[in-house]
Length: 616
Image (cartoon, rainbow, N blue to C red; front, side, top):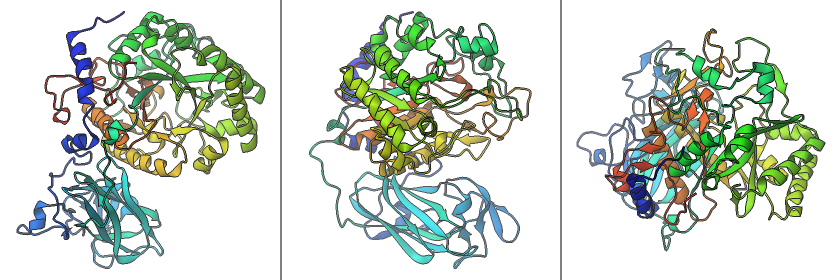
């Protein structure tokens, strides 16, 4: 069903050029600091003055950048435990609270913080008014075990790393971020790199800049290409798939798990009910509705989770019958992420049952050859297939399974090179081969390569990306706060940019709740997928803020490609979907206006493109 063009949509399109023509610095100046929740806004610290812990009321620094509770002397809100320990999360700091957070008696100048138990331990300390050097000072001790190492980092408000390093025990350790631009929101962070380091006397001093960031002739957002927004799509919401009919029965689809879901703990919102109904995505008219909604809200491409095993394809009907037969498929690009993981009997999974592998993720070299021929012949030539620099994009989900298919790095590289040669022989300009990387496996049977960066280099991939935030950030609580996971992922983004020698395409995840795939009669807890902790507080507004942070970060650097992927269009049984439901409606695709964009009457669009962007 085609939706008519409304006056609101016309006004939206007319103003996009103005809206996203704002320079990166202008956006930064008007945006709220991403990590400022729970702390008061701060003005600039005077050059040469320290941002101190617990300043006196009459101290001028109190109006400037400041580290709250940097000496951990304020034990308010913490729970007294045994042997001098205090549990919880120290005042002024963010991270994961723990029973062993602060020790009242240990360390050179007790109380002493214990960052080894506090996760991504961080604090937003304010915003700079002028170009400055930021000097983070702190003590590292070894009150519990010998030879600990503490990792310290200075980030901007979008978690771009400004300075970082590992520190052994010693007083007055210094980490310097030089030439930090005016208007930069500052975040300091600590983690245990080795052992159990003690942390104390944290302060931040702002000095006259010894070097300044090079002044660009024009804003970075106008130097490079626009941001392309791609959204993952999981296609198991249709009847008639031959494999599903064999194992689940006629007319089965994953909608059955969505319907059966129910609350598993206090505050748990289930079931989630689709506003459009339990539709058949293999129907081209249904897919056309999805294309309209995606294209109208700034999404450029669907990346289909694409399945092909040794005995043939799986879940290809939404692509072949739905997308490719939709009359409006020219409005949206599409591409594939080969989901080459083991397909398990987990829909639903009975806790404690044997994890049966229905379709192994490894394929023979001969069948990989057939897969290459199939995608080149049937999909890559389609005018809507997504290309980067003219080359069709094709992503690999599981590098471990890919290696197992060929037995060695050398043989795998030869297979990928052959894939590229086949594309050239078909008169394509080559391929853009992408690798999904992760640090924390989710599905049973998933493995992590020993050295992902070296493997990406050895196999010759053109780029790397992520599928979902929790591949990089743990969920320590049954209901882990969305912003905690967001901040941990943005920290990983900084690491990925430095680790890999090819472009990294970042991810924004809408949520996580795999409880619909867990058998509803079994006790629910963090026992292993799909019985696992969830992300909570993932409101449309918080999701929008994460998108804005990603946009600012992508536009802050010249060059390209600028690509962002979103998880997910329709992972209903993993709690990550943009499709409208009966609670939020279209709010994950539309949001209210904010001062950051200086347009009070226009509905917020999830387009992250800068000026000069094109319609999909």
